[in-house]
Image (cartoon, rainbow, N blue to C red; front, top):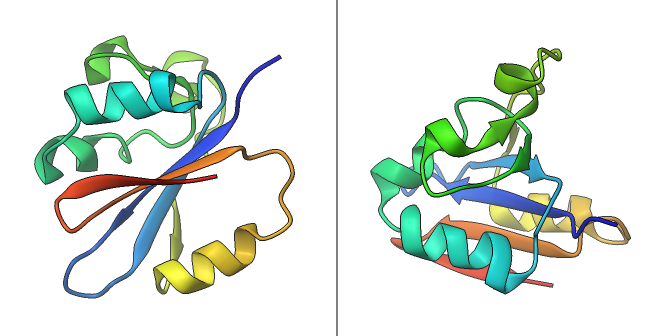
Length: 112
């Protein structure tokens, strides 16, 4: 059984939020730890949204497993929301996503 999560990034100027799904290891000492240790700068965090949804994250983009790039599936591009509030409202009641990580204000935040 997988711990599913979403990761998001907020554009500091427009406040738009891009979101992708990560299937495995979504708990804080999995995906959370990977994000803080390896994607803790905006330039690095933005790279995660170039390949769409992911099976799992790893220390580098090349080591991550993205469905479109590595599984030869149709790429599910990052979804875009007008702002964080609308994204979180859309997620309300989603029983499959256990953790949401968002990069804003130059750091990662987590919500359960």
